[in-house]
Image (cartoon, rainbow, N blue to C red):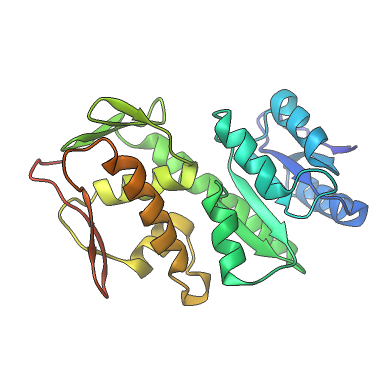
Length: 239
């Protein structure tokens, strides 16, 4: 296990999970110079232990690991209610692969070889989104769905709905703009901070999963598709 730390007690804590020692060392040194507090491990088993003890603010997670894959680890921690943001690191650049990674509960995706400046920028972007969501009004309620920002919980007709962090951010964006069509490009830029090279498949996938989870409990559909344009959270109630 490699460990590097910042002198600041309130430094952002980053857990690096990659089976290549050279990448672990490079990221650890670079992030430490940027005043992050880091820990680095080479497999999912050690990563799970560090997530519990280190309690990182964000996880840089390689997809191809020697034991459980990064996707599998993310599914596991999400099923345990751990909402720590995950930035995937992988050599595969196919759009479908990106969609899969984000669908299992990841928050962002970087392909190897990556720029160290890009990694730092992505970390700040993810944490900025997380901080912004927490600073919103404590409760957002539109129609049959309610978001409790303090507890980071979503209720549909009083039933607690289990959402990934990105699903939560997507729903929050839609509910903050009720009865207004939001273009897919707008959603990409707001929820993910960039447009995946113009690929909107990730939005379509996430809306599909979110719609299925919500509509299981609502009396009518609340997320509507405007074909060829985007999506709208529809409700007769005022936000």
